[in-house]
Length: 79
Image (cartoon, rainbow, N blue to C red; front, top):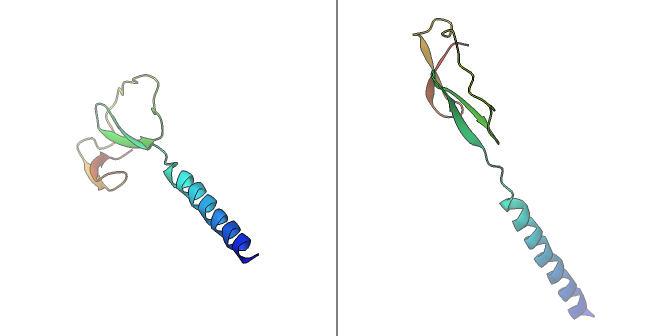
């Protein structure tokens, strides 16, 4: 009787460990994309643009940049 309970408890623990291992391995692929020519950095799980869209005007106060920490530390223009 006690061995059956111990065996059942051990089986539940093993199955729980296997399920948690599969859940932990399910990690999303987040990529960083740098847009040309001004170097805007964005993140996403798949490609963010289907075609290359040229920017015809420079950003507001173009030579001025500020430090941005997300997604990586870099200099960015005002939007």
